[in-house]
Length: 542
Ligand code: C2O
Image 1 (spheres, rainbow, N blue to C red):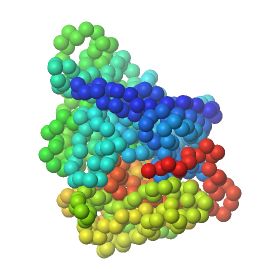
Image 2 (image 1 turned 60 degrees about the vertical axis):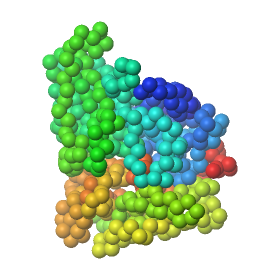
Image 3 (image 1 turned 120 degrees about the horizontal axis):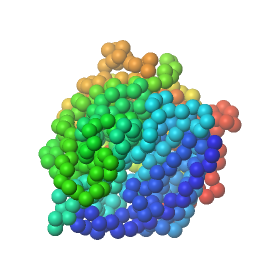
């Protein structure tokens, strides 16, 4: 195993899109940021040098961080942000994981411009891909261009009910032939292919908000992995990918040579904003460098996209994924948690009464601590001091009491303490009636089995029968379907403080999160070691 070392210089620069210069904070002057490429078992070392005017932390989304919670990068959960002109080195390894993960800032909305792919190939010399070896591998990072101050955007999320929309969706940072001012056309992302060759597309949804349908005109995909876990090869012409998720697909360049659009189209089940160009980006698959040659008016084939309000296709896309490897699913559940996830409206009294969106899990809206990280407080046994004044034990709500009660939202730093080696089953229930929204729930530090999903209200007697205990997909993000529920199961063998939260930024910014505190196990090698020497200080947090 090797050591893969990177230096991430975080700085602010101006980018011009849609005829406006906007200051954005990026890594190494790139958007998306650099892809980290490693092999299974490697150690990864990333020196983060913060030259930007804002505090940042970087989360390695999907990396298990076994006995290494200090490197998880969740702001105010596992660390305080790295302040301007300060450095921090993240050290972690990628053992027992293969496929595509990604990294992103975990502070406010900054991940919209601070993100990149994390690619883990099979260990050299030992195994190789459990599928046809691709001729080439390409990261496809779906994102958004906001064209606005992302720190301010986060504050606005808390102070209104407005559904904010970006200027455009992006593919690998390109907006894609959007009509623009003064006849200026935004660039397309161009993927040059050779006829007959096989490409492995490593698709990441790094967007703050929508799920996407992703399609290439005239081509089929074979899905081979999701969230860095292999799945049984699954053929489809349409990928559905929620924020936080990754999907690896093989595509064979076997169409008549020409040019083909690849389209990322945001799924928007709610509301009239579907008509905006904000949720679409087009790239081009070009045979024999055609798109690079002088444009000769060759027509570009357009894929037929699903309706933007269509959620069923996304539901079945997720339903059709099964694990390639048959893991042994732990049968005896030690602790079963029922969690409602929803959003509502909360009004503040006072001299200027204001109403804003509030997001909740079991009616508690998560408030991160203000002055220090939960992990550090837990590690030094001072959870209950003035660092965290609003701790609240997170309750379970058995199914009959899974009410969506708009009247009883509390704001707290909600924690669920769990013993080491506990088999947890979590039923995540979204509102079974409108307004409802699909919520991609991401768990830090663990992969989990997805046992079942369904529409309506979870029914303990009936729905247990439908659990897939044979080959359930293993993931780090669970897309709770619109008007429905999802069941996940995992074992807590990684001491630390781990966030479970919705990967829709407006939802997590307004409280759709809970922190799991996994206690140390009985031995040294089940005990979290002390923090690294350069662990960011929590002085001057605001
Ligand atoms: Cu990818 Cu806590 O997030």
